Image (tube, rainbow, N blue to C red; front, side, top):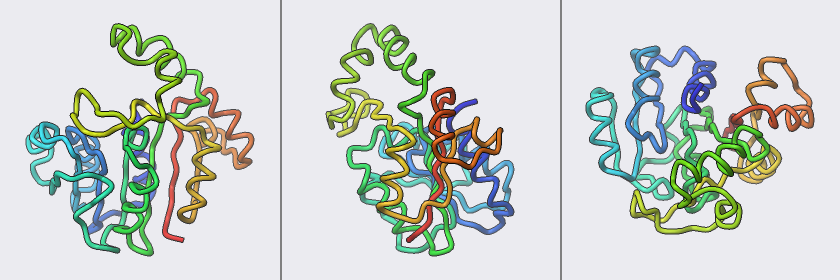
Length: 221
């Protein structure tokens, strides 16, 4: 299952979404918006991405969605207007994680939710991908030991031509500490902890080793 599909599972728990406003940050080519709009036909969906070709593809994928070309650390959206802000595999690339999260919280209503789907640094699957498979795929240009040394650095991305980070994945421990410093942490889990109905955080940490990603649900403090 892809990360955006796991994000959809988290969003669906807030059903019904009739008349609700949902903003997808880093919406890419619109796959997640397309799937959500098929399930929730009266959803007011907005996609935000800073790469114009992605938005051009989204026009074909989700013609009924509103699309915004913008930097996620400076969202051209009013305060307190969204019911759900969702992102998948976004924070590992954004150049300023704290500023991006604060923007998502700013546009969220007091009763709204911020849903974040991310890869986990503790995950065996993630580490194999980034240390072994990623270097093979990019012919050594990315991943491997180079990734371990540089993953926190902001650089000019050769694909997007904008400041970004290269797969700066974080652990479930880091995400809990960071989320609680900025907002009210509603829930944090990995797929296995959800399947097994595990509530103890340290058990979730252990299970995250065998899960590809983690899901974080926040609201305004």
